[in-house]
Image (cartoon, rainbow, N blue to C red; front, side, top):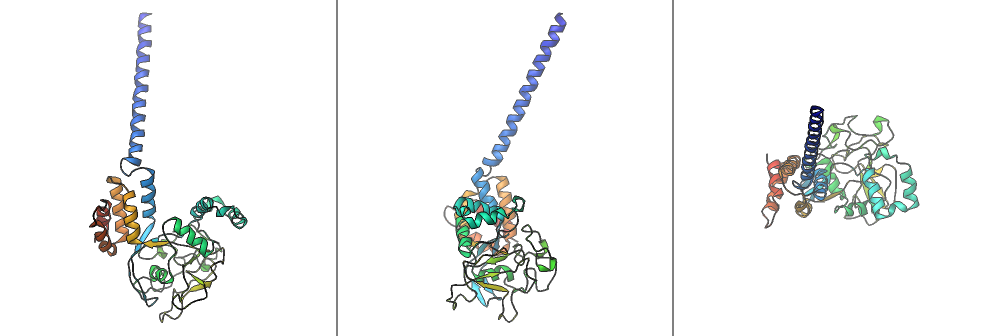
Length: 318
């Protein structure tokens, strides 16, 4: 009997110690996860700020041959057209989603299409969305800089027309596709779906300096239009729509931009620091490329500049 009782007692002690070890391991795991979210990057706010940065691509200031004009400031640009999921959040937070028009439209958007491009907004609604992100709609010249680049490309990917690199009428789908689905159709700077999927609102008319009609333009074509060059080599024709700013259509959406200098200086303090954060910033810098180094060096040299700029520069340098 004594030996049985001893064995039971030993078993209880072993069970208790196993539970303790499991509790200790669980506690350590929770601590590591918490530290990944806060010790390295400052928690949810830092993670959100980093994710927002990772969705942007860099377009340098300079000559825009497609427009025979100049962009005078470096830009950060959405890699992807604004999605339905992002637009739903905006509608809920802004109160616009309570309107009869938007309730009817959202009822036609299955929840599983959240990564499709948002559409059907007016130009004013698009501008309001952009401002909630601290961004804005591109001007027509800026859009051409994003799409055609300093090389004056006829298509986002180059000067040769290809099928099946954009969601245009050639595919015959007659509906949007998830943003970023066409790797071969992106611009060298990393902007996806610049042609196809949905048209994209701009903040002005194509002839902004002389147009007094109040019109706005949209560029890029959609799933309802065949692929065409962004512009003619002579610069006399552009693949665009001239629209009243109150116009809506199922194949007109948006992409937003912001001054790179303004955005990076404003947001850098939110990114936090730590090995994982620095690695992510280096990857962003790699994507921005050497064209961003001059601006990043300038920002890093300012008094009180966050250390984050050093990581972006490390990635961007050739």
